[in-house]
Image (tube, rainbow, N blue to C red; front, side, top):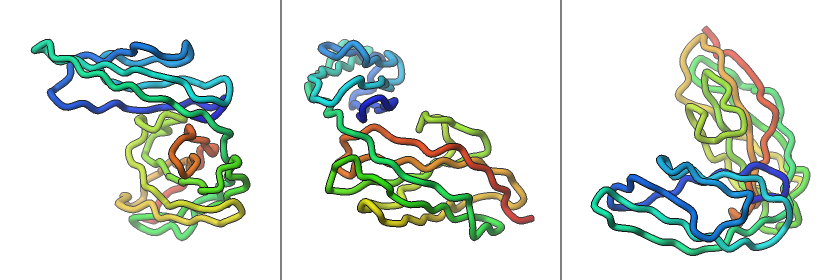
Length: 178
């Protein structure tokens, strides 16, 4: 995660889990027992030990102990959509800070016909735009859109090492050509 930024993870487990839980975890972290969606807002930089649990209807339980590493958040700018066509549009912007992570920033775009806010699971689609260094410009294509439809999008970045929570742009809107 990133300090002060909402963090989301989705646990996956084999064996058709019917329940997810937290063993050892910081008090700012929670889990949806049905879906395995983990969320929270880390208050400070550090490494936080966490134990995730999963169980299925047959009573089999899985345990995964790990650490969530919280870093400074990167920052990025996001431009209005351009190169808008019948079935797609480009999104672009600049990495203004890598959050002191010299491995760069991983940039993703989330889009759909409704605004999913800062929850990556609430968007219709997402695309990974790539990994970029501080000061670099990024550009990616939102594809598979429908003619004459209004879309919402947000870009998000996280430290390239994957340790940071997503840092979100404001929601922007465009319409494909008709």
